[in-house]
Length: 303
Image (cartoon, rainbow, N blue to C red):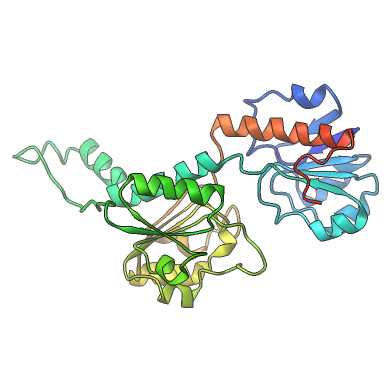
């Protein structure tokens, strides 16, 4: 079987061996694949693996040898699963592999906002500490999280791990599915839910108006959950004191995205999943999923 990994750069930029795949299939991998490269790369392919490349009905119907689509992630919004089911194409994903890593990143984003490490590091290295006669300074206030509340939207594996970390910091946890109003009006709101048609743009102007004044927004889920223009307005007015996000609606964002110029919006390039340990799990699971399919199994099948 010919298997093509269309966009492996995020999962395996070269620090993980492909031997697991090479043992049982004809395997080709590419760091990135543009639309105009699909024709050449997918001729004769019976299996595709994608991280974020969109696989829609048109592609499935164009490449008639295709029998299997493996998603190198937990979310599957980049694959038309309805079309795949109709066309008899198997689809698998890698469930819950990055729960610890993404929860850790959510905590890191929150602590970056509250503890101002970047500001104080810069101050020390620029001599401001030395210039203080008493040897200490506190130019910017640090926020104590103990006693604060966090609203968690999406209480799956990642949301539960974020809750555990928050509780360890002494925070009160409000779970959106149990008490939406308490979650929205918390001191911190953290998104950890999958993106669906029903919740796309859930953090819109109305949602933000119901948030606590000066709250912090954390997003390590999907960028499409947020109306970025509404968020930009809220950050400018300080209705939301800060946002720390690892995902955006369009990745990478356009240069004129309003969030990029805001000093109280902190952005990382979708790296929450990316410790070497978790990326190894992705590669191993993708290989096991495909091997299971070839043997007639249904390991991690979505359709």
